[in-house]
Amino acid sequence: MSDATKKNGMATASLVLGIVSLALCWTGWIALACGIIAIVLAVVAKNKIKADPDLANTSGQATGGLITGIIGSILSLLLIILAIMFVSSVAGDLENFEKSLDEWEELMDR
Image (cartoon, rainbow, N blue to C red; front, side, top):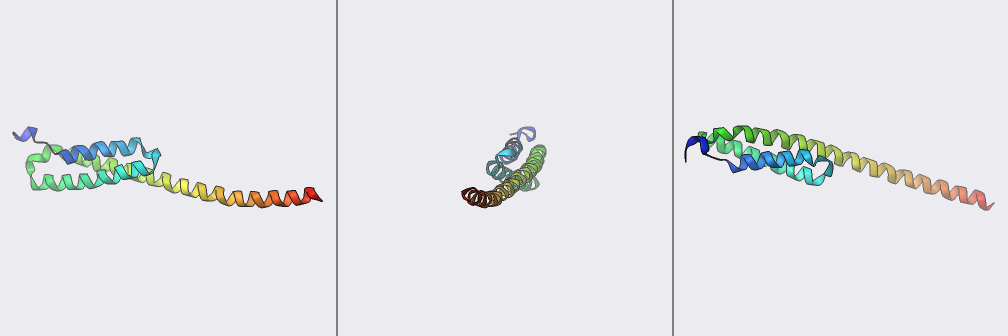
């Protein structure tokens, strides 16, 4: 195999999963999992590139996978945090609403 055609599958997989995590960042857990796997694969690919300089042509893919994996993970994590905050806020408001309805019902029964 010549130097120009040597492939690093982990770098490619990292880039693909990083792009998937960005595209699906609104899904939450799926994007977070893809992003974390992309980051891990990018780090492993970078280490392989350091060990075998013939793989230097795949360094851009590993870097792209690392960056997109980090961004996708952060966006999906923010979405998960916002969703949890929203649900807890709505649950607290429902308790207050239920108490208000009970009070209103008592007033109407008088």
